[in-house]
Image (cartoon, rainbow, N blue to C red):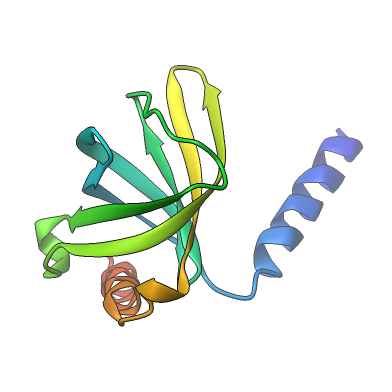
Length: 125
């Protein structure tokens, strides 16, 4: 029990030590031949993790253009990001992919999205 508490404490400390707060949101996502609903997790100004029940045929270290169509309650129009796929993982029927934003994606769309997610979190919605 003591080891479990220590591990949980270390994991919590790791999360708290992140430089940027992370957010999650459902969105419609288009990338390559895939179009579907996905959970965007660990969203920061530098990247995000895409979680889907559908496998997406992607290759790590490749660059992609991904269109994000946010939930309507964010008030954000769809936007496109240039990203690099860093990693993929399949577990328990889920497809997970970690993306880093390319410098071409620094037009403010992602920051505006994060600002809306932050405001939504603070309002309790």
